Image (cartoon, rainbow, N blue to C red; front, top):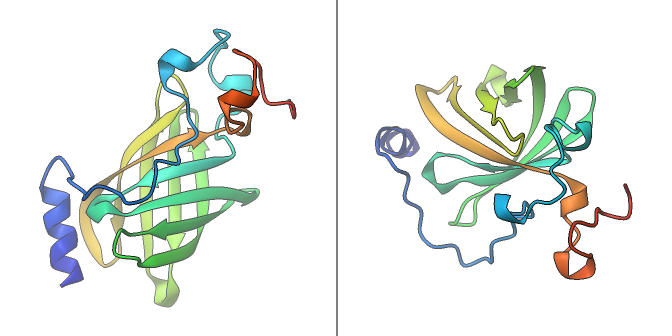
Length: 161
């Protein structure tokens, strides 16, 4: 059953997910609200502090760096299902590869390209149980933009920086 839903989701474009009952928690300001004309990557921060992930079948998640190449991944589905896994990252300029490991030698490999403005990642992934390439994308979250704009002056960076 799950296999069939993944295949169907991978072959139908665009992905249509039911409206979320949770408010949009994205912390990345839209391009027109970014200030100071800083060069890519913002403040030299290529990978950011977290990635907000969207995958096939309406799965969303948060990936956060732990140490070195190790990241923690958390996924949630509108039905209430949740998944947690460890990820390992490789990066060469704008190309990223992330491997998500599961028990019994199962894994998923995510390949993607960081956008020219260093704010998003687009790519495809495959899993050992499903070889059909599926789409994924991410927003790169940086802490200096996580402080609500109402608490900052226009163009002011997070006080931590």
